[in-house]
Image 1: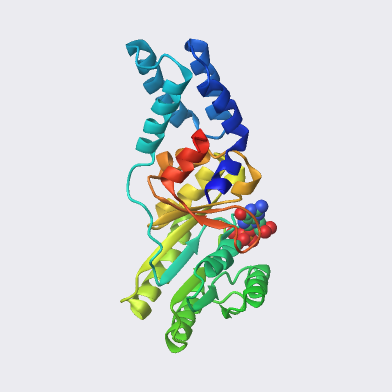
Image 2: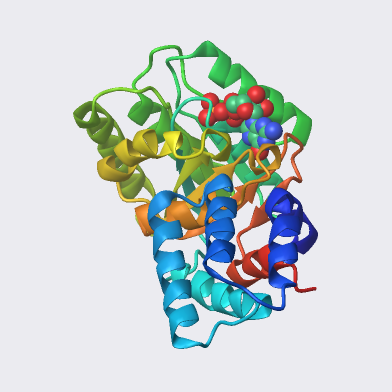
Length: 291
Ligand code: GDP
């Protein structure tokens, strides 16, 4: 996993290494760092606050060379990711996120990641036939059962039936893929609330984790869409998808800063095993490339 995180940030790490290796630094070095962080999708607000801390260190004389910047960055990035860590111990995973953000692919990957557990996949996106077909194809590939609703069936009633199948089939984990239509917040809220109530009624004694998928390729553009889901229902963890395509891992910090929700998983490809549980310190060390 460590090697993978390194790859995500590769566009940035070589530039950072050059900077960390300098024996003297000045204002222009910090300006260079600012450009590197911004080019890595770290976001204006996070970059600004990091730079402010570093400038204070330069003024106070505690940061005088490249290696001091590295130490200060390690400290500040660690502080940025402070807060609860996501624990993947749920019996029910409810996946939400905009169409195309990688929900269905993640559902399949999560199944593979949970190896050894008996998993049932439920496709509650009844509005797009392709969504069900895609889930079914994954089910075949991974040899796991998939429960799909009928076209235009009420998603909550599919979830109800899925919960019934889950109880009867003696499964360990239920993964529910929902529809990611961009609709009004009120409608989305109602739909998700109904699904949640159904799960609560059917499987009230089970732990439920709601995960929001966010497409890292879209950078800051994905935030507004993701916010609609965040405001519509309570989210336990974020899944950053398509991290293989960016080389700009700064989005992790921007997302954490914006949503204040733990990053649960990082998805980096289209193969079932290209998924990693997010590990804060491994991620930071891979950016700083200290190993
Ligand atoms: P959904 O509409 O949210 O269910 O999104 P899908 O799972 O269908 O993914 C949309 C597209 O992105 C598909 O072509 C996937 O193969 C692709 N995709 C999903 N996750 C990843 C990823 O981590 N890396 C890459 N490169 N592609 C991905």
